[in-house]
Length: 489
Image (cartoon, rainbow, N blue to C red; front, side, top):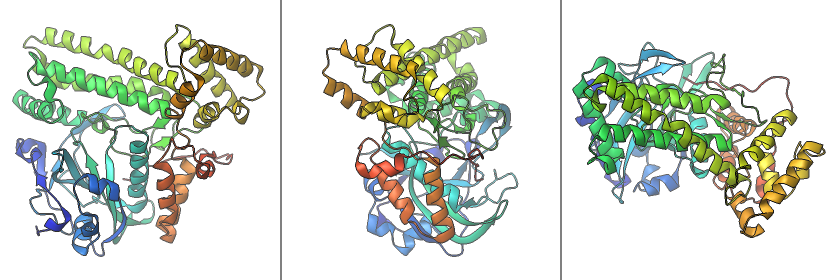
């Protein structure tokens, strides 16, 4: 099945394939009937050392669809486990294949994965395929997250398959090419701990350290250092989610990347009206992964990671547990520090005062009471138009605004510096749910990709504050039907 495609610039290594067989199953993608490239991320392709024009060739399109594989790739499905809504189960790549690791001209290493490429040994009765809509959705949201400056997997291409898949209805099929620092998950370690040996866990941990955290390789207890570094990255990541109103939707342990990237965009969405209880996912019926719960769930997931590492932390189990608990206890402090610093920046506060938390909490409370738009409230404050918010006319907000202005006035930094800090911390646009749906409908029903490309262009510069972004900043029209998202599996 392998054919040469050197013109495209593929430069694969396959370090994950050198791990014990426990961690994967070798598998070729399943060919499709009529592959067609529908979107290509040209800027990402260039950064990976790939030739954009060659990627548009028939040979490359067949790679993106799974009809052939690049030279030196070694396709495999990764094994992992996960707590899904709190329930532990054996999982794995049921509809995805890792082609290999692209080595860029800067000697960086990125996983290249096909999503929707057919059945694997981990499909558990599924067809291994994906629908066009959810794959385009991941493309849009992941690229928007990248533009927002949030660590994330990225999307290189989406290829239509020319075949239909059956879910609740018949849908057009597609394959997404995903790019990631790696696809190592908390669930990968859980899998090793439950179905492997201590040495398997050690091998996986050593691989992870070498690939993502080489700075701790010489530490006296590298595995404790690994745990602390993963906690540190996740604390920063979740704070960034909260600061822009992003709701992942399915924060299962198999959806938490050890690299600290946002991964597995399923029923994700961005919050419009500020409410910590906001849930969009149709399967999250109890609100486990609601916006306000995301920090707590991240801490819970990290505790599961620590459990898998326990035999490596210390020979004495009690001592290992103590070390893990000490490391985990840092998460809340680290997360809160990142979140508070981010909220200060959103309000243009360049220094720290004890009452800042009260100032922030008061604003969020007013926003929740007034059902104010989260993004647009900060956008209005940034451009000096508080009258444009749902809070306008509220005496409590007027009093809050006076407090905020007085707080800004106590800074040594000039007003222009505060405004610039706010402009760089408050996006003018986010992937509004109704705009994403509009783009997906045009693409999947009418084969009109211009709506999506226009949206992607606007989202690529979220902090630009350009007039042509205004229409994309508008919230959706009121609706008696709550917005719902779906996994698309």
